[in-house]
Image (cartoon, rainbow, N blue to C red; front, side):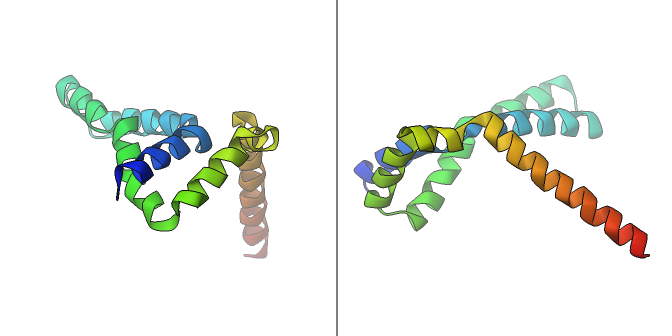
Length: 116
């Protein structure tokens, strides 16, 4: 991939993907693994440093490159920079949508349990 496309991919990630949730989940999962596997503080700190947001972004770049053209990236950035796009990226909006999915999952589980 050329430098220009990589630049636009990284800009797309920064402006269009909500990485706050990933960062929170990463932190919680690393904490859980550290307790579950009872690793020493040194190993725990080394693994925290290994699995950073930068590591995640570096691994996303080739995936985004595979699916998006340069024009797709530019159009997406324009949209997510608009008022409507910013609403979609809003953290609380994402949380509320996640709650709906969680609620539906719980309802499905209860319905199946009743039919047993």
